[in-house]
Image (tube, rainbow, N blue to C red; front, side):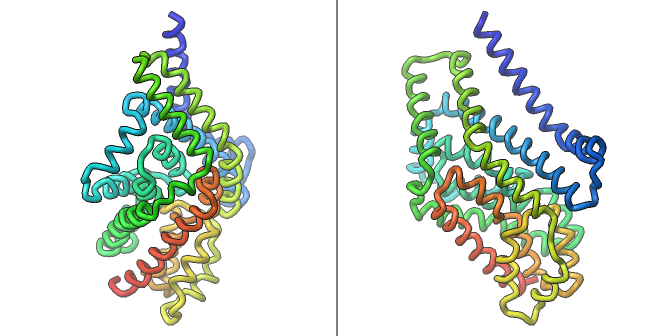
Length: 344
């Protein structure tokens, strides 16, 4: 009977977290704009709203996804999954699936991190995991719809397809570089513990109900370990949220300047916004004479590379790996920017 009480308690906790996640945005809006009487149109009001919302959202996602991956690992051990993905001839489809999954998940760069941690914990090869991490913030259905209305079918298809292809190719290249040694010891420990635990459960034929408390506890431990990184990363993002000095960019990103694309990408990295939030900004850029390809490259860099993302990734990657990841994606975005300017 005690086992079933534990199961019911866990299910209630999960239900409460899922409900909170669903209604989080209006709840945080009420808290910041009604209860705290902050102005929603002011930078400080929007930043505080963003900080509270994204911090809670990412912690909920991290707990739920870590717990879910723990359940998956319990029935499909890490080593078996890793062997399957690394020995079967999937002809690159694993990168396509990961990239496409990233495109249909409505996450910004920071919100993608919990899934990234879950995938790494679950033994999915690093290159495949990178395919998801690259594409997830770049392409989502809301941004595609806004892009369609602002720039038409050709530009929208170019943006969406190139984002998915960049995830596939980037993940493939990063995977071939064999960068697993540059994951932090904390991640390696999680992988090792999950493998040992799942093998023990499989050997002892431990019932699911007896595995569940350990799985949930591990999910909570992961949240606890990354909490400070989440707070610091989202605080940085909140300070920069929505801040784009339009006049400065439109002056230096004109079609006449050959360095417009790399400058746009490099200057975009310190900023932070999701794809839907940056589309109206690049629409203004284009109206003021910035080439569409340069504007798209700027958008990709804003949403796909950010200081808050780097801060969160520091818990799972060594600085060298973060540098390699950012460097490869920056190069790809710059090349795409020049290509977009030729074909759009």
